[in-house]
Image (tube, rainbow, N blue to C red; front, side, top):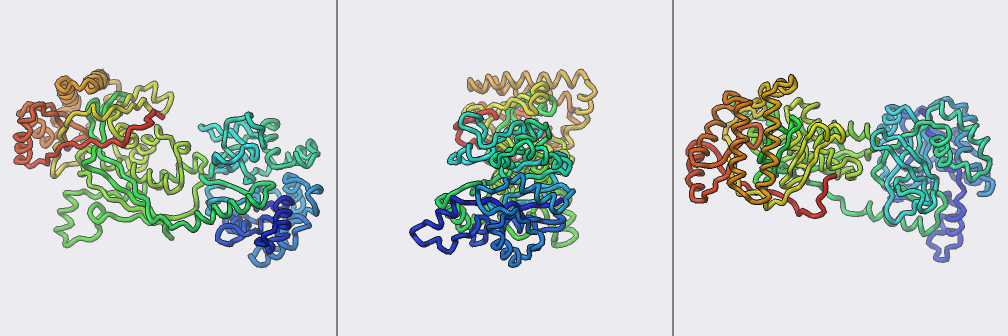
Length: 621
C-alpha cells in the first residue's frame, strides 16, 4: 500500500485575504500554503497527517504532490520532519488557473514513480477534529470490502452540503449507492460528507486515464467527480467508512473559515479533560412471559433501582482493564480463604465481560465501517447485583461497558441503533463467553423502564429485532423480591428445554405459545391496574414453567422460596433464570409476616424499586 498526500491546490482566496488583512495579526502567514498553516496546538495541519501515515507497517512509501509555486515551503517542511525529499512530486503549476486538478495530480504521482500498488489518497490540508485516526483500522476495512473506500462523516447543521461530496450509504453492505459532488440544494437529504480520504485498488486506478480523457475541464478533475464517475458510470463497487468526527478547511476557504475553526478546535483542545465517563445499567426482573424470550415468545420486564452495575472509562496512555477487588480476586489471606471464596463466588468475575465487550466493539466497528480514534483508555467496573440469582448482572456490566465505549468514541444511534444494541450485548455473552441467555434482559437494560417485548419469529427474521414497547411505569404494582444468599449457577436452570424446542417438541412449543398469551393478558391487566388478575397470570406463568423445566431442575432453594410465598397467599414467579423470586402481596397486612418468614428461612427480602428515566420522546427504533 502506498500513501499519496495531495497539497498541490492553489488556495488563492485564503492567501489573498491573509495578505490583505489590515490587523497585521497574520503577516507571518503570508505566502504560507494552507497545509502548513498552524493547526491545533501550534502544529501544522500537514504534521498530523504525516504522523498518521508515517509507519512502514502500513505503507511502503508516502509521497507528497505539491505545485511548483509552493515547493520550497514543502521542501523545508520535509527536511524538518524526516520526510524523504525525493518523495516530493512537483506538478509544475504556479497559479490557480493552470492547476491540473486532483485526479491529474494523482495520475502524475502514479506515472512518475511507476507505482503499481493499492493507494491511499489524502488531502493534506484538511483540518480534522480528531487527529488520532486509526489508519490500521481503515486499511483493514479496505481489505475486507475488496472495493474502493471513501471516508465520510456526518455534517453539522451549520455546514452546507453544497460544499462537499455528499453520499448515500447502504446500511447493510456499507456500499455507496449515490455520490453527489457539491450538490445543489434539494438534490439529496443526506448529510453524509465524503472528503479527500480514499483507498483505491491498483486495478481500479487503471481507469484514471479513461476518466482524464473524458473530462478535459480542470473543474471536472476533482477526486469527488472521479468517485461519482466510478459509481454511476464505471459501476465500480465503492464502500464508505465513517469517522465519528468532523473535517474542515476543505477546498477554497477564507481567513474567517480558518480562524473560526482554529478557534473552535483549540477551545476543544484546551478544555479541561473530562477525567472519566461513568455509565450505569440496572438489574431487571422478568414480570411475565420469561423464559419465552429465547423461544420467539413475549415478555414484560422492568429495570429496578435496587441493584446496578457501573462502568467507568477514562483516557490513558495504555489500554487497561481494571480488576474488581471482590469479583476478580488475585490475592487471598490463605488457602482456606481461596477455597471459601472460590466455592461461593466461582472463578469468573466481571473482567472477562469488559474484555469481551471491548473485543466485540472493535470487531463491530471494523466490520461496520466506523473508524475509531486511536486512543487508549482505562476501564473499570463496580457492581452490587447479587451473583447467580437471575437478575441479569452479567448483561448489566456488558450494557454499561457498551455505553461507555460509545460515549468515549463519540458513536451515536446512527452507528449502533438502540434496537440492535441488545443483539450486540447478547452476542458478547453467547459468542465470546458461551453464556446461555436470551434477548429479554438486554432489551430492558438498553431501553430501561417497564418494557413489553414481542420476539415473534417473523419479526426477528425480517428486522433482526422484535417489537419493543415502553409501558407507563405506573402500570407496575408494588412487587417484592427475594433471593438466595448462597446461590448455585443460575444458568443451570435451562436444562434440555432448548434442545427439545429445536426438535419441535410439541409440549415445549405449546408452552412457549402459552407464555406469549399470558404476556398479552398481563399487559392488559397492568394497564388497567388489575393486580388480582396479574397475580393469577403470574402464578400460571410459574406453574407452566415448572411443568416444562421440572422441579428437579428448579432446585430446592427456588422451591422453598415459592412455598413460603404460597403459604402467605402471594402470587410468585421466577424473575430470571433462577436464584430469586418476585411476588405480589395483595394484602399489605401480610407483608410484614411474609418478610419475616423469608428472613427466618435465610433468604434476602427487599421491596422492588422500579427504575425508569423520564419517558420523553420514547419511540421504538
